[in-house]
Length: 196
Image (cartoon, rainbow, N blue to C red; front, side, top):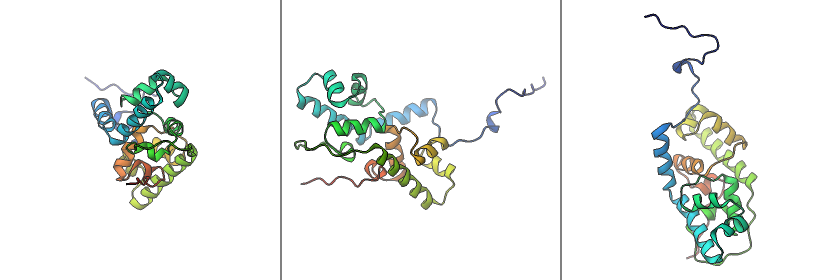
């Protein structure tokens, strides 16, 4: 039986397609997602929300929409450690809880809340791009190889580096783990100092 010829409008064969870097699929994606959702960063964010909700005395649905400014569905997903909020949503939560974004990634302290700090989404996006760029420069690798190493697709790598992509929590956790730094350091912040 003769092989069918590929017409002009058909997509390129699998081996002819341009390699775009890291792309988990199927079970690999689900397994990696579950591992990332078990990280301490995700747990700490959930703990902050749970403690703040309990301290407020409000109904959970009211607290999510009136205080945090997010939907109740999104609130439940974050609290149950199954959600993957964007960096912008995390900024909103940190501001509502009157803590800095890096403090949101750390275990919640047993202290009273203070004046809300300035959380600047654009500053964190810029810092994220700069930190990734610095690590790439030091690696001596091509951008595609470096993107693969930190488990990003090539387009995602460029968008994050240029500050044009919405960044999800699990992406932050995965990249920080691959670079061997904390999420706070990935966003250009030092780990917050805890008073003993």
